[in-house]
Length: 95
Image (cartoon, rainbow, N blue to C red):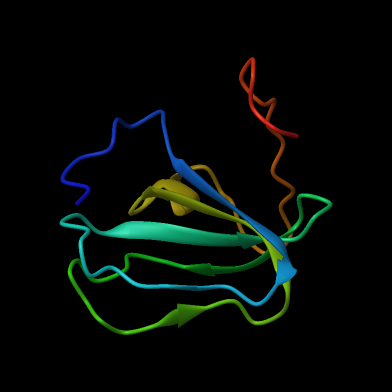
């Protein structure tokens, strides 16, 4: 039920090195969805996803993370399949 996402934030989902599939059913804004390998390299990106769509958006290979950002953010930050994503878990988060 995401209706807005601050520009400097995102939503991360953790997987156990498996194929991942997302949908936009309860999301009211377009997103960029990044599928990320365990080493932080970007496997693939779904740009400008359609809000409230029931279409499945899937990784092209087993991945460990999915990062959802506001639509256009990947392009604005020049994130592509040659990129590596780095982040530090917040205090108390599982690594």
